Structure formats: structure tokens, C-alpha cells
Length: 535
Image 1 (tube, helix red, strand yellow):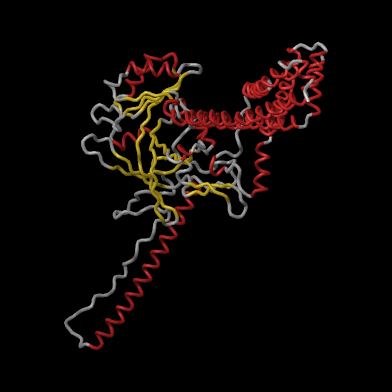
Image 2 (cartoon, rainbow, N blue to C red):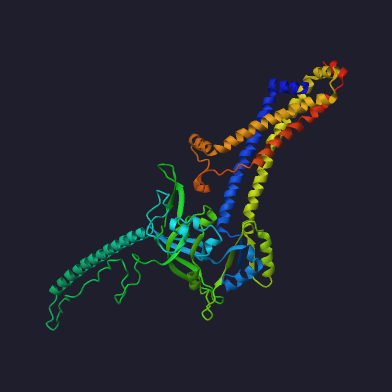
């Protein structure tokens, strides 16, 4: 009992121990906060990466693709049929997107992806990242009337409503341009007539020249009231009021930029395109001999927002059959189509690496120019970088607790020197060396337990109110601590792992105990006579 009483007395009366406790507290709290934030970022990143990438991808090196995807899917089912939950064929090709905004042309390099609207949702969470609620339930490449992003009050008018308004505005501008040209031509014709009259008046009239009368039936063809383009034969080519081109789903960052409003300071998106606008896509065809650039017009029917900039700023989706037809990936004789990749979703709990290895055995690299990878293999460098960053941060932050351990070591040595006579009296009264040693070890355990306990509580409280704390810091500093325009998160993601909290607290107590071992051993080895004679 005397050991605990002495340890408590030293802990309560020695204010120098407070510095050690604060060091341990800050180290534990910082480790818990950093690990929780990193775990939150990692979880969000994994979810977003896996949401667009299927479990296993069989990809062809050649842009011309692999012929007969049905045969390939049959062979894949022969290898892992009972482990497959969904499968779809995809065409992936680099392309150039061109659109106009306020009279200026913009060109963006994109990844054009042809997907099957019926089966693509079976291998990924693609639909949940679309803005229109109807497309989230059933994916189509048809333009909707309106109702895009209903949860966003600042989202502009889109769909057929925007398309008709735009067509009407363009028609009015075209009519004004024609009137201006007619007026200019009339003014120019009037000046020419006056010059001709003046010239003819000054010249003798030839009686043999007869001037024909003006044609009363001559007139300018009026513009089509529906905004259609009139051909030379009187037929219509395309009516933007009632027709659309092939549907196109665009990554939201391809045609928008996120920034803070200069007046309110709120984060908002500025759009260069909307659903209902037409764009031009240029991409290579599938010819092996002389590949050429193919260009066609598409109508934006929805936006895709996964909140991963790598995808939102490059991915553009079109119907699979239309892209195959435009690129010439359908054999005109047999009707067999080609695709560039096959994406596979496996059932929960299935080992991805095992299925990948089986497919690599079925499609060996020396016979098939395919690359077979899991979604983790495809994002391996990014995931490895996050793991390395987390490990380095943990090592560096544990040094804070190590510094606190050296403080505990110095404090204990001072106590041993100061209490040498007291230690001699205890040993003279019969206290064993192990008992004296236990006093200082108990002191170290107490410092570590108090510091780690308080640090764990503070760390968990900080994690619970981290977004409110970030808002307060933004008000004080005037700078965004966590800018949604950069990270595409509305709030800081956090995940508290109970096992991590336990390990951090236990590690802090262990460092405190280890720091008290040497002073405890020195106190235990003191001889009672020498300790009593100590001045």
C-alpha cells in the first residue's frame, strides 16, 4: 500500500510531472485525430474508387479491342461463374470534346467510354453519381424535361426546357442577323442606285437598251418558326426544339469549375455546359491499316459526379452500340462487335486476387494481349502512397510521446537524487529493493495512464467536433482550413477505430513505464547506509 501512496503523492505534488503528462496527452490526442482523419479520407477514397471501378477488369491493349465479347464472357463464366455477380462489356477510347460557351470554343481531352445502359450498373455504383433522379433509378441516354439535381438550389435550368430556350434565343439572334444583313444590303443597294442614276444622268441614254421591270415575286425565305435548319429543297435537317443527338453523360468537372463566390464566400460550381447542350466529340476509329479521326455531335443528357477529380474531369459516357458503330467496331459480314474491356463484379467475400490469377491462367499473356487487374491493382500507386503517408505520420507523431518519455526519465532521475535519504530510510525500515523499484514504476504507469486517458478523451472530442473547430479557425484566420473546392468534401471525413485508440493509449503507457525503468533500478540499488549518509 505504501508504494501506491508514495506514487500518488509524487504525482500530486510534483508539478514538474505535469509537463510530462501534458506531453503524453498532446501526443495521444494528436495521434488519435490524425489516424481518424486519415482513416476517413482512406475510406472515402476506397468507396469512390471502387464505386466506378469493377472488381476485376479484363482490358485489351489494342484500341481496336477484343472481338466477340460474348465468347470471352462465356469463358470467364467457365472459370469463375459461381463467384460472379455481374459482368458488362465496355469500349474505352481517348477523345477530344469541343463545345462553345459565350461565343468561345473550348477543347477538353477526355476518356470516351461506351457502356451498356442495362448491365453497366450491375458492376459499379455508376447510377448513384448521376444528377437526375430518374437516371439514378433507370439509366437512359434520353434528355429529360427538367429536374436535374433537385437538392441543389443553385443548379441552372437544364434538359429540354433549357434546350428550347436556347434554340429560341439562337433563332432570334439569327433573325436579327438576317435583318441586319438585309438592311445593310438595302442601304448598299440604295447608294449603288443613286450612283447609277447620277452616272446615267450625266451620260447620254442609249435608246436601244431596255431596262426590265423589278420581279414582284422576289423575297427572302423566312426562318423556320421551330428553329429547324432549312435545306435547299425545303426539307428540315435537324430540329433542336424536338430532337437530340446521341446522348452523352459528362463528368461534371469536364465542363465546370468550382470556386468561392466573391460576395458570399460560399463554394459553388460555375457551368460551361448544361444537360441539353450539344457538343462535338472527336475520336479515332478502329481501323488497323489507316486509323482516322471520327467526329460527331452529341447531346449532353446528364452529369456524372463521383467527387473524384481523376474521374469527374476526364470521363464521358455514351451508348455502347452507338460508339461501336461510329468507330467501325462491328464486322459488316458477321455482325460480331468488339470491345476494349470486360468489367466483372464478384460476389461479396470472394478473393479478388484468386479470381484474377485464374483468369490470367485462362488468358495467358503470350496468347492474348490482355491486361487482367483488380481495382486495387489499377489504383496500386495511389493506395500505396496513402498507406506510406499514414505510416510516416504515425512514426513522426510517436516521437512526440518519445520526447515526453525522455522528460519522464529526467524527472525521475531528479526525484531519485532528491529523495536519496528518503529511499535510505525506507530500505532501513525493511522496504525491499523490489518495493522501492515498484514505487517509481507505479509513478511511471500513473503518468502514462493519466496522460493517455486525458489525451484519448481530448482526441475523441476533437474528432467529434472537428468540422465545427475548422469553421471557427476559418473565422479567426480568414483562410479555409478544409477547402471543399479542393477536396470535393463538404465536411472533413473521420473514422474512429477503437483498436487504434487502444493501441495508441497502450503505447503511451508503455513508453512512460520504459522511461521510469532506469531511475527505478538506480533507486533500488542504493545501499541504505550510503543513502543515509548522502548530503
